[in-house]
Image (cartoon, rainbow, N blue to C red; front, side, top):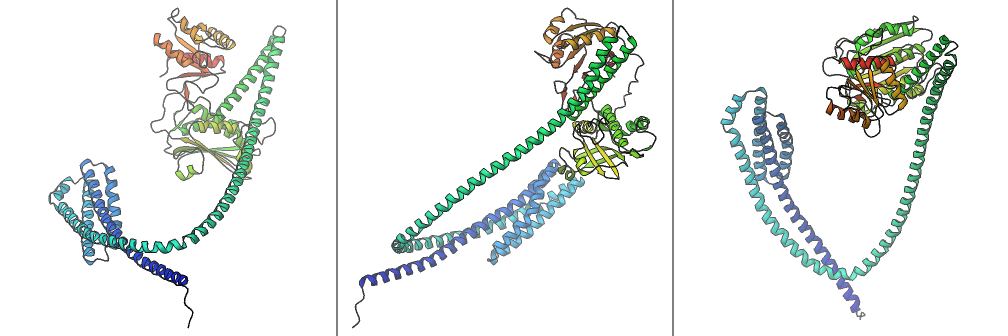
Length: 618
């Protein structure tokens, strides 16, 4: 007889059989539950899609009604959005109800009515655009649109009712499947408990392996962060070295040029002091040499301020064609007879918003550079044109604002520049000319001036062919400035006994200004600071002009002027300073109706400016 089976083995086999049956049953029940849930979700999705279709039609109708009432085109945005997206929503509705012939037929009727409603709304919008209000009113009175919306809502309500009934039945099915599944899961839990130990042990092993992998990943991440920090530190050090090299070149160039000019000034004044009694004529010549050296130093300071975009600009509407035509004779004499000079001036040129004097200096600088590039002769052309720098151009050029510009270009047929020279052409004190034949500040001054004015500069150059340098000047929207430019006077304008209050905290500058004004025939009182100046107003109520520095202790010259004009509102103010980033200059532009004289100034410049302020400007 066969040996009796081991009860333990039999129980184990039964347990495995029950577990297998429970698992198979659970799988079927899970599938049934999932199917029931999918039908519930499908019903909810259909209901949501019906709401979306109705919302799109109502959105289009609301936008059309708002535009009809207000004529504001902003209301066309919801109309356009609703009409554009309705087709997508309808197509999705067709897809969702394709399994139900009844719902599919209703969806087709909704589609037809919604499409007709959008077409009618579009007709109304076109009639409104044409201003045909009578046709719009007549169309509204027919009530066609109202009936269309009623039918659409009615069909959608029918579909919602149908879907609600389906949802109730499907929800009951899902609940029954869930209860049955729960029963099977209880049976399955008994079998799961048997294998839980083995599953837990396996999970612990996997968790341990994952922890090891995580630790390794964190270590690698920390190493990567450390390497990144080291690389960023190295890059920052390289950038700092580049900055220091640029600063070194700048300071070296400034020191070189200023030392040369100071050598001329100091040496010439020393010689004048020695010769003043023995040989007055030579002493006068030495003084002239010192003045020339000082003027060169002032020009260098002006160029540095232009490069740094810190010079005071007084822009206005300017006809670039008239400016170029007026400079033509000067430029012909500057470049010499061996170079052919031409101008190509655009018709209908827009006025530019620019400082005319600074633009003249820029054109002279560019023409001198072009002349030096054509030692054996050639052709130099100045051209003007209206141009537009679009978004694509601005995206590839830093600091360029898209918009309309007046272009002034200088083209030469000289030797041209290689790419590495073009890249550094605007750097201060960078020059390819021989020592002593250029300061290296011409192009940097042009660049700084145009950028400060809100414009753009671009160089195109090819070796052996020539160079084109284009200035893009911001367009002025309005009329050009037609005020006549005052002609230079042969003699310095003199004072007529007017009283001028000079306020300057630098003693030597104050003494020089006082002496110069008295030399010009003015009565001068002076103060070493704003507080002292305000205290003097009660004793001198008949002041005709306040001539004040801007940067001073206690308060700025602008505040001093405001305090003074509270007592003497009729007194004009003339400001002066050696650095323009202050109370009267903002974004590089002089404040409106501000009179300004930049330091250093000559007695001639002082005489003209003071007379101009006292006489009043048109």
